[in-house]
Image (cartoon, rainbow, N blue to C red):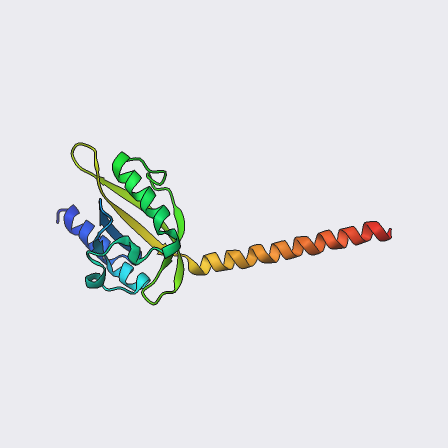
Length: 155
């Protein structure tokens, strides 16, 4: 049996557990896989045609769109080439989650940006664990400094 790249690609993007979201140059969602449905709570039918505001917290939208349109105009992004970006996102139920994602730019034959896809993973649990650990380390260091300071004043 010969390898069928088109079938492989479609099956992979459709079935993968990570969210895959493809948006056109205007930021309208044109592809929303099952991973995105599970992560964000919107069905494909609900998401298709909506803007990315669907998953972007309101306080971050202006900054997002500034960067998005700049990337579409110039074709330049700091997050190309597999760079991993961590940002908050919002689910259908209004809860915030932390996601890590990479982007894949799509260009026409002339090299002009026409769309972007993002492959996203929910890292909320890991983010919260890291925040807890950082807080515990800060508390430990504060206690250590306090203990060290009291020894020098009593000695």
